[in-house]
Structures are given as C-alpha cells and as structure tokens.
Image 1 (tube, helix red, strand yellow):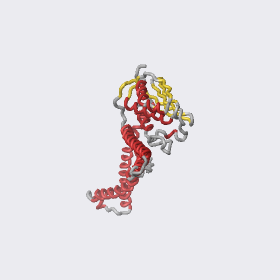
Image 2 (cartoon, one colour):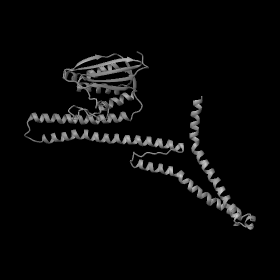
Image 3 (cartoon, helix red, strand yellow):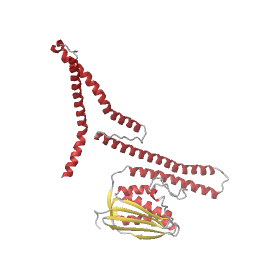
Image 4 (tube, helix red, strand yellow):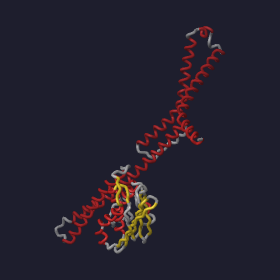
Length: 358
C-alpha cells in the first residue's frame, strides 16, 4: 500500500510540476512587480517627487501606478521568460537537426521533470532512428552487391555466347551458368520480398493446429533428390506432435534449415533431425557434420545478407537464416545455433505448444 501510494504520488507530482512551476513563476512576477512599484513610489514620495496634488488626484496616481506596473512587469517577464523559453528553443533546434538527418543529436534537459522525460524520449527516438538508418544503409549496400554480382556474371557470359566459333561444350557450360545466376537473382528477389512481408507483420495470421512431425516428413520428401545426390545418411527421430501456427511460414523454416544442412554437409555425411516436447514447448534439432561455423561468424549468421563464405562459392544470398529467425520470433519461439569447426552445426528451434494436448 505504501509503495502504491508512493508511485501515485510521484506520478501526480510529475503531472503537477510543470503547471505548478508556471503558476509560481506568474505569482513571483506579480509579487516582484508590486514590490518594485511600491518601492519606487515610496522613494519618489521620500524625495518629494510626488506632490500633494498628484496624491489627491484620483485619476493621475492610479494611472501612474498602472503604467509603472506595466513597464516593470513587462521587463521582469522578459528577463524571466528568456530562461524558460531557452529550453524550448534547445528542443526546437534539436528536432531541426534530427529532421535534417543528424541522428547523433542528444538532449540533456533536466528541469522541470517534464523536460527531463521529453529529453529521455527524444534521445531514445534519435537512437532508434540512427539504428534504422544504419540498417537501411547496410541493407541497400548488401542488396546492391548481391544483385550486381549475378548481373555482371550473366552479362559477361552472354557476351561470350555471341561468338560463333564457341565449342558446344563451352556454350552449354556458359548457358548453365547463366541459368544458375538467373535462378539466383530470382531467389534473391523472392527472399527480399518475403523478408519485407515478414518484418512488417506483427500479428501471426492463418494460425491452425497441425501435425509438426508429418510436416517435417513432407519436407524431407521434397528434398529427397538433394539427399540422394550427395549420398547423405539421415538420422531421424520425429514424433506426431501437434503444433499451432502458420503452417506455410513454418514450412519455410524447416526447408531452409534442411537445405542449409544439405549444402554444408560433405558427400557421404550425416544429417540428424530430432523432436522432443517438454514443459509445454516443442524443440526441433537440425544437426549436420559439416565444416562448422567459426566463433567470429557465429553471432552474425542471422544478420541480413551475411555469408561466412565470402567467396560466394556456395549457393545462397544470406537471407535464409534471417527469414527463419523472423518467422520463429513471430511464433513466439527461439532459435539458437551451436557449432564447432570441423565437427558440424546444430540449429535448435523451440516453439510454444503449452495449450495443445500431448
């Protein structure tokens, strides 16, 4: 009860502080004006500047007092308001700089409490805008790089294909590269659009209950050709657990993680997929025995366009794991990655399922 009363008192004090400050300022301006005016007329009377005729006249003396109060009050108000308006001018200058793109601007107003709160909110807003600007710049730079590379490649091989004396084997090889780079561009455009759609989505739509184990089995069937091409062994431990969410979005999560595992697992390697349920949550594990991820790269793998392979020798555009992370977060879950060089990588996805029957 005491804590509640203290909280209410602080909130009430914060709300009343600015009106109270202005009320006190007006009161003191009036008070000082009256004192100064009274003191001036007292001194004028002592030095004989005011004669009996002025004192007896009922019009002149009140008029003189009124004029003196107006002049003195205006002078005092001008001096006092300069200090009060100074903080507002500082805020206006700060907003002007922020509007012009200077996101490093910070306010340090401390009094009254409302101005302190205003400063904190302004600084938080400037920090957020600065972060968004950095992300936007990085996104544009990375997208430009990822988009330009296949375009240049397609242009170069298309020019070489114009030569009539080109052997059929080389022509077919160049055509395959053009087709591959075109597919890479299409994949990049699709992923960017998908990521944009997911990032603007704050509420999960099209939620329904479905068999998560069966969905994973279907994803494995879709990728059968890739598994067979690299002669990969599968270690699968799946269960018919019910999960509620957007089935289409979660399908992208499983396909992305499985495709990543196939991509980085050497020929003849092994991929493990597991499921378990505990404390109202379902945990999915995707393990490969590939080269692993370096400790320096591990914190960045969910960043947009980040690829550990800077040579781009492996297919991809660095958006798959970003999309996976956003979808998992949208479902109220978590995704983590554990990896050791030359030992493999494990992605762990945990999704809530407390309201579903076992």
